[in-house]
Image (cartoon, rainbow, N blue to C red):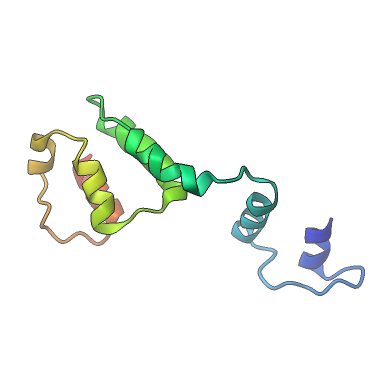
Length: 109
């Protein structure tokens, strides 16, 4: 109710800009009710993900952990590269310029 009242400015509450947006609501809900220390557990979780001959499954598990860990760029690619077979990486160039990590993942798939 407090969030709703701050979102609308009702009942004498000061209206908070952005509170009507879903991502702001999700952030506030996770901050208030979410599990604790998830960001600290995420890097360890990423290191436990193993490639098992299914690149889509591996990337999905990796990305799920990475939602909290927020690894990007060279570190993101190195963590993935360390788990997959060399021939998979040889098919795409590690030195080719990709717009972002998402493009690199799609090329890998």
